[in-house]
Length: 221
Image (cartoon, rainbow, N blue to C red; front, side):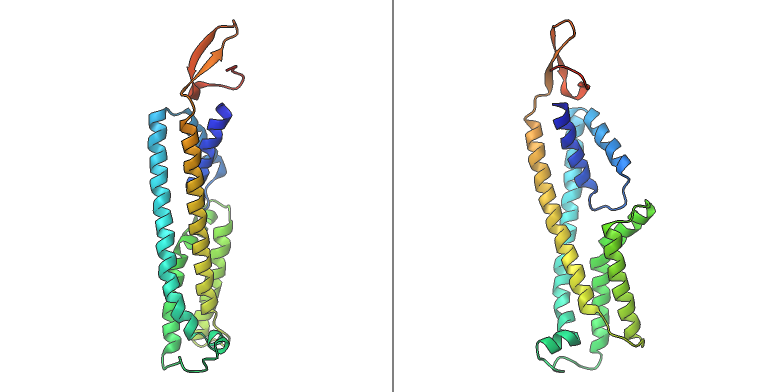
């Protein structure tokens, strides 16, 4: 019984920190243990705060994805490879179109890529580089190189690749966080069905009621 409750709080804590990036796993484990020791009222308050924070993050990823998706359309139409693929020739090119492409891509990089850039900073700060660092490095290299080409460096720009990569990462994280939150709510609903007290069999054979939160390894229930 104790293991089931402990597993519930571990998953909830993991959901809270999944997209923060760079958090120490030992800290998360300690938080999960502290949550196991708390009373029902405190636990309910913490769970509510976790849900509010996670719901805010989901809305943030959703809004960033939708804005970047809209801006990606002109980026695609102004990119030469896409124009060639659609057999548009130079119909959509105009004086200054290169700079329009640069400005749109810069906004997508900063606005859409900000969660990954922040995640990279947190991961590097904790000396645990991971997925956020990988994504942030990919979009940063693509943007910096493309910006240098726009300013005169010989080469090809990768603006449409940058925009679509950010869109894919945003929608992926958005959908993942929604599914994790749904799973966490289901687990919490199951945990609420558990009794608050357990019948503990004492060494002398008597049965006493103890709060579930106070159960220890080796207790006979």
